[in-house]
Amino acid sequence: MSSVNVLIVDDSALVRQVLLRGLSQDPEIRVVGTAGDPYKAQELINERKPDVLTLDIEMPRMNGLLFLKRLMRRSPLPVIMVSALTERGSRITLEALASGAVDFILKPTANIRQNLTSMMEELRTKIKVAAKINRHFFERYSETKRQPTNHRIETLHSLSDKIIAIGASTGGPEALRTVLAAFPANAPATLVVQHMPAGFTEQLARRLNDETALNVKEARSGDPVVRGQVLIAPGDYHLQLVRHEGDYRVICRKGARMNGHRPSVDVLFRSVAKYAGANAIGVMLTGMGDDGADAMAVLRKTGAFTLAQDAQTSVVFGMPKEAYLRGGASRLLPLNEIPLAIIDYLNGRSIWRN
Image (cartoon, helix red, strand yellow):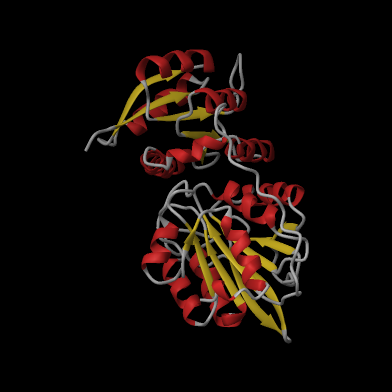
């Protein structure tokens, strides 16, 4: 198997050395260079043709976000942001994901030695995934190709008490924006699990709230599940649907990680299958791994309508692929067609029956 060639871009010589040492432990990864600023990085990109870039946000001469935007327009390649666990760091990281970054990794802030080990394990995994992503992902950012903007669906003929449950991981924030921005303001209540650490899900909710017609918020235990609202699982907490005195509500809890994740799509989908069943719509968006795939099969067996994002529009066709192969997703659709299919289903078009 050929190695993944990686370029490290960070203004700190210490961080560059730490990343170099940590990445070099994996025989499938080869660091082809390090750069302390974006200008040197561009030279090395042109010269050494890396497969993946790790990019710090705060750098001299040109910040990482501006460099990322220029890179995506001219010569895009997979970028993993190295982010700080701060409000500013999470806000800029989400902007980076919206500007073309594939994923991000958090710098450890406490218990450095132990957390650095786990960080490097995660980074090595994400680099190898990033090297294999769908290159059509970059078309929306290039100077010559633009993805058509999803227009909002204004018509929902009958108000519905259905519940939409969505799972997503790598590439999910932009996929969620595409789906939710197309929904009308009276869309069914929507519950979302996006694999993200604590602090970032609140920023994601704020961003989606600003960019859609829906009321989007980070979920809190006891929140009612109501039409026109989207509840996003808080980072490091599972999100579950429950019924309370005849009404739907959510609970957020710690609990063990499921499929390596907390929040887990599996936990959400199983709770939706239990309490909503045929009254639910399940959607699996782009993501690495198989979290939620088995639970979506359970959800579909209850009579829920289920969809998954297709390979051509997924950044990583892992979770949607497994959901489809295991019988959870009734069909695979391009991302832009998913909200249309959901609204058609709610409006009673028989073509979208499970």
